[in-house]
Image (cartoon, rainbow, N blue to C red; front, side):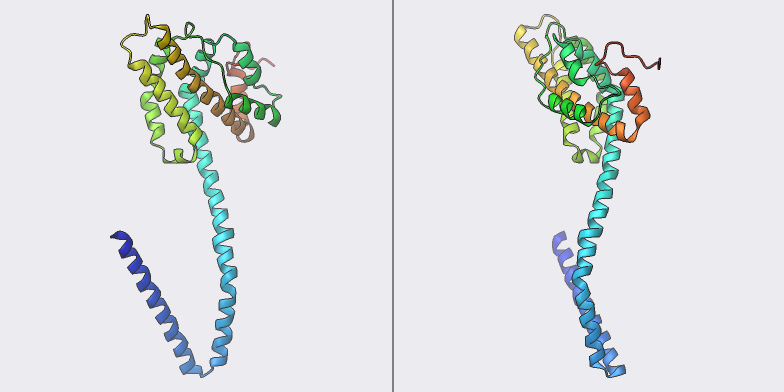
Length: 250
């Protein structure tokens, strides 16, 4: 119904515009009696239409779209940053200790001041194909349950952000975090779980951690180029190094 009304409105506006244009041309001819002059300017206006369409539809629209995407990207990176400040950084550090080979993860994710584009690309590839499953016996499931439950309202607030449509990878991370939290909440007790159930939960943790690593690297790339002071803090405090410490000693 609404589309019909809109179509009818467009048709009416088009008819009125054409009629007004025709009347103005007739008035011009009636006053000046110069059809040659009318057709010269009419042809000139028609000749400019393709160029005008190109400028408006292609050039200007692309510029505006690019600016809009950049603005949305900036806002989303702020959202991603708030996620890591509130929850992500704690998850990165806490879960790292549950792997049997944390040193190998450190070697791929241990970003430092010497990192440049090649190292970040390698880290993105590594995190995209992350294939380490945490040791179920080392996972502190109760702590993860409490942490995710405490931040559930915060994550729900993030999901309400309409700009999430522009960042599927971060949305996947949020859903993986929610899923793990729901799995942990669904169990009356996390003590004395069968090995099969522990393995299932460990796989859920692995899925979330892989997304957590990948999104973290993308966020660091943004920080390095746009906010070096925030990037400096991450370099000093991230868990993929021997002694993370915010204090600047050198």
